[in-house]
Length: 61
Image 1 (cartoon, rainbow, N blue to C red):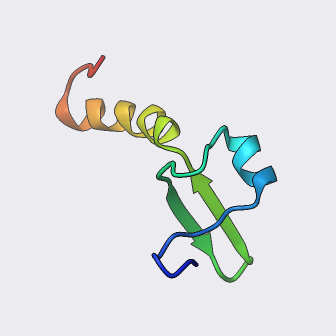
Image 2: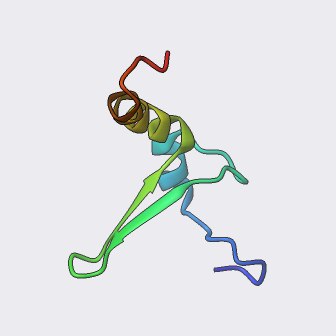
């Protein structure tokens, strides 16, 4: 973590997820397995939109 509270991801991790410095992400961790998963915003929409449509009873797109 930086002094500003930012997490620095290695370049290889950014490149494989298509991230550029400054992109906001959702982090999910499983400390028992020593795993940190990085979710870019575009992926979150792809994952959450169908669930939201299901909950709201219609198509969001």
